[in-house]
Image 1 (tube, rainbow, N blue to C red):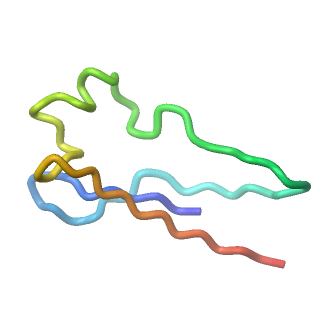
Image 2 (cartoon, rainbow, N blue to C red):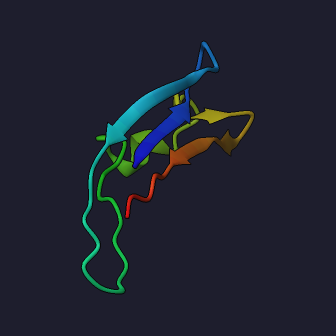
Length: 65
């Protein structure tokens, strides 16, 4: 799985993380501190991650059998 977000000022997608995960049974998983920043900084008016008050994320998932 690869995750990217759109970021100011360029507005293009910037790679955040890439990971491999082996699924052995049904379940859920997620990420902790994906942007490596404090919550206050993340949601501030000057945040680099919000463009026109919208967070743009992209996730690419490849399933191999």
